[in-house]
Image (tube, rainbow, N blue to C red; front, side, top):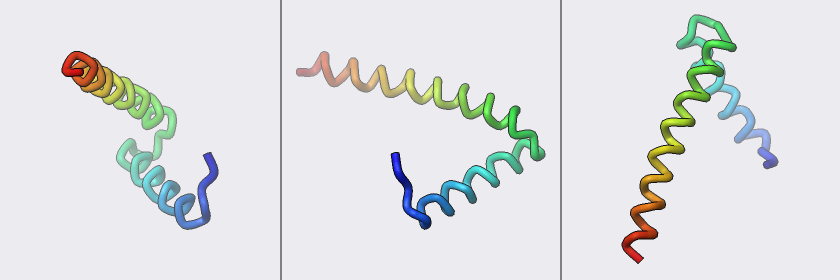
Length: 55
């Protein structure tokens, strides 16, 4: 995936805020992001299964 400079700046700002929420601990922030992504993936899987069942 390639980002333009505007997208890169926006992503950097979001990353900085997320790390700041974890008191500057980037590893702690990364671990939480991995957990959150896992939860989101589970929810997406349920939606996808529901769509398949409806068809």
